[in-house]
Length: 411
Image (cartoon, rainbow, N blue to C red; front, top):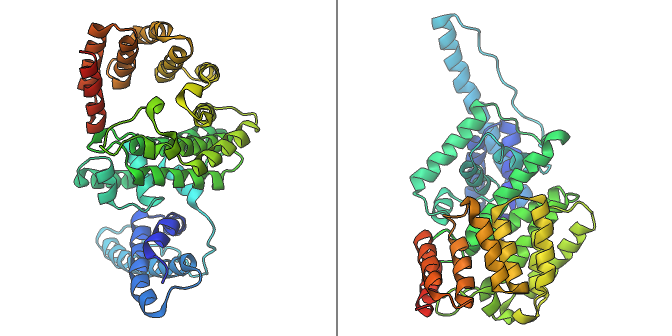
């Protein structure tokens, strides 16, 4: 029998997107698909899995959805008749029920844009994307983002209500709106990846399930919009960063910085795929944020040892990135690259310039980066103050332990 869990992960988003298009309801679609999976578990165990489990599930879920729509129609009809008699309102108009065979097209693009509609807050966009396209349960999403399950459940309910009450269309945006909306979709996927790659809180630095889900969603986006170079850049960036996953924490559970990592542990297949995707994206000659970040990650991946890193090329890429974005975090990363290429004194000057507007005062990596350069310059008193500030701002246990070790080395 086919692995039902694998089928679930692979087919959930595709099927749920079709069911939402048919019913106009997230809840009805989810209920129908859950019933189809329950039926699959019992039937496939007895008879074996079908040749095309995704098509089987879609057909069964569609039938169950039709049953639910008919039940709703019957209840609504009776209620409307009673209301009409009592209040002399307009009589109930029977809705259309989809009796014909469904064309099982890929509706995931509509679903992605609906989940990431700008009228939804970012937390709701992330939760709804993981729930519908990823098929993650409310419990799984709540655990991944370290929020109470009841809070996450309410977030999902409010998001669905907003879509229904505000009449958010289940559609692919028009050409003049697609660029801004696509940027929101990309940002949501990358946010999911970053929460998995460097968890904002908790005992673990990395949450592999979130990284894997973000990469899977990135592949879906590339499949649906293959001519958008930033989609390729985003997927490349995630693959190249994920390739270092096994080297980022040692056997003792301690954080290992990029320059100290055992590069033999890096995932060569992800590096090869990510590098090829970067090159493919850049050949389209519509350079964007994710492509440049992926190019920087590719330069790191090409170095067999830390001291072979082409820091001047990385500096140049960051300068191009700063040209198209005014992000203070990009400026901070540029300063750190300059420190490696030209020395810590020059890097510290640039970092202090970034801090002039105090935008990064609550960003622990700003203080950690500054502390590292002060340590390299043997300015230990200042380094200790900066490390202590960084320690007060991070809530991840692994990162806290790393900063404590650095702080101890500065005594």
